Image (cartoon, chains in turn green, blue):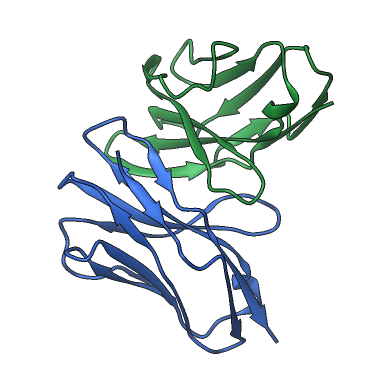
Amino acid sequence: DTGVSQNPRHKITKRGQNVTFRCDPISEHNRLYWYRQTLGQGPEFLTYFQNEAQLEKSRLLSDRFSAERPKGSFSTLEIQRTEQGDSAMYLCASSSRDNWTQYFGPGTRLLVL
Amino acid sequence: AQTVTQSQPEMSVQEAETVTLSCTYDTSESDYYLFWYKQPPSRQMILVIRQEAYKQQNATENRFSVNFQKAAKSFSLKISDSQLGDAAMYFCACFISGSARQLTFGSGTQLTVLP
């Protein structure tokens, strides 16, 4: 069990650029979650997949945010036309089909200049 | 929608002593789970302990235990024999299995362990 992995760990970009983050869940975990965490705050839920189906996306912060999980394994989170307010830590978590406990990855820290 | 409140932004404890972190939550659901997560300065979120709402017995994991008061919607974390490695931000979280299936987090308590 290698745990949840996320890449890249750090990303610096200029305002207006698009960025994409990747999350690889724990193998055989069918549920995958994305969260955003700003400094000094608890994580904020963004979206949730069960296998390849995105079952909840109403919490995505704007239409600039999108996520995919095409084959029910890894997932990507894309932010288009980044803004300085998008600077945050983006966390991914996964859970198994018979246990709701979520296990988190190390996160991707995004800085928008 | 559920809410989670941690009223202690910062706490400190002497090494080897016991400390209790407070958490209250609010939900109208009957089927839910409560968690404590720890986030050290490296920022990897680590599961500390989990409590199913339908279980009356308080969960325990080694030096970590909870005091789950369902009627009061209170879920405190007790850390016994505190160690320097326990220093971290601690988050309380609530999960409703029947709805959006998201974890709702509190704002966290920063725990300092004094040598």
